[in-house]
Amino acid sequence: MHIEFLGAAQEVTGSCHLVKVGRQTILLDCGLIQGGGKVKEDEANRQDFPFDPASIDAVVLSHSHLDHCGRIPLLVKQGFKGKIYTQRACQEMCRVMFMDAAHLAERDVYTLNRKRERKGLPPLEALFTSQDAEKALKHFRGMDYAQSLKIAEGITVTLFDAGHILGSSIVQLTLEEAGETRKVVFSGDLGHAGAPILRNPACVREADVVLMESTYGGRCHRSWEDSFIEMGEVLKAARLTGGNILIPAFAVGRTQELLYLFTKYYKEWGMGDWQIFLDSPMAIEATEVYSHHTHLYDAESRELWAKQKIQEKLPNLKITRSPEESIAINAIKSCAIIIAGSGMCEGGRIRHHLKNQVWRKGTHLIFVGFQARNTLGRRIVEGAKTIKLWGEEINVEAKVHTINGFSAHADQQGLIDWYRCFNGSPKLFLVHGESEAQEALIEAIKPWVEAQAPAAGQGVNLLDPTYTLQDLAE
Image (cartoon, rainbow, N blue to C red):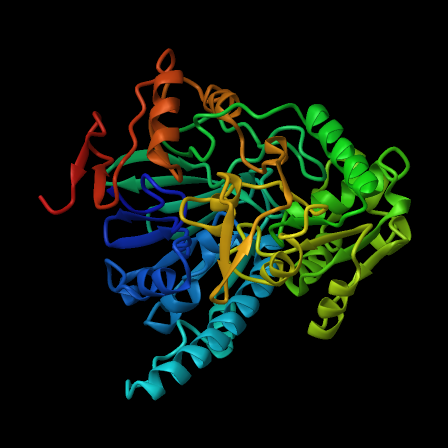
């Protein structure tokens, strides 16, 4: 009985952990590696899995962000035949995520192969295709929160609400082998308490070993109230300067929060003065999925948002599905709020809007999500004076704002509070975080537990009561 840490180990993307009990082997997540540009991402994600996909009996998926689920179609393509267990809303959202990712992969490999052909090089296959995505979706089995299900011999899974995005789960595994029982809890990505729309992360009481995310292990978020005030002030300042506002936003979670807040503060923030563009086909589909699962909203959001369609609450919201509609936004020089993906500016329509707007001094660029290392968003947040898009150097003259309180991840105190819900002091391993954040959290949580941050390729024997980390190569 053991765990192997394979991805999101001392880094944020590529979440993947292998759990072995007797002859049964399962994965917790199977996510894409992101950051560093398309070429590096593609190379990293084409690397062989450190296991035979056909040997995996099941996958338990925490949520539908691609850094947690994005390699599942590739896993199926390479021989996985088991079932994929996740919360029902996550199952529906994965269709949106997979089909969009497959479309982008097919488009990118087409462009790449034209260049390779001119160099006399053989063509490459897409990482996975739309057909691969459809095949993967047939393996999904939806679960409800608090439902316990035996998914393999000696392995029972229970899901709890993580409050991160719609359908996100904390995973509790009850493992049985040789007369021994261990409870392992994987946090997935924990939500920021008090966030719009969703409920706070659930408290889980029983665990022997905890795998906890640490994205913001070194930071404390501003309060939601302060963040809302700052957003209102930015909107007012942008209105006075006459420019547009660009908001790179994750299609799932952040976009819906923004639309909800624009609804809630419509009068207070002067939203009627703006044209609001939702310029992300995937975010449009994701918003529709949100509308199918209003029973997962918190009480306030159900009251405010669930009873009417979004366009009825935001009459100045314009949904731009086609490329032609997106291009037409470029003609608008002021009083437009443009919400587009991707959230880290690594792809999607936001890159076109950056090219057309970021060099204008009246433009405001608002980041409301985590920017991973080696992403374009991270470079802009850290003060880049120029950026390169499609081979062209572009000056960054826009006013850049980072509103950290909008994070969908728990901050340091939120992580500590969640851990302290457990009875006793279960062994704690930190995952899904950059090393600096993990080091800060290890120090901050010392009064309650001696945490460790495993590296990729390390593992732990769950039948060893010391739960000592070991290098798997040894």
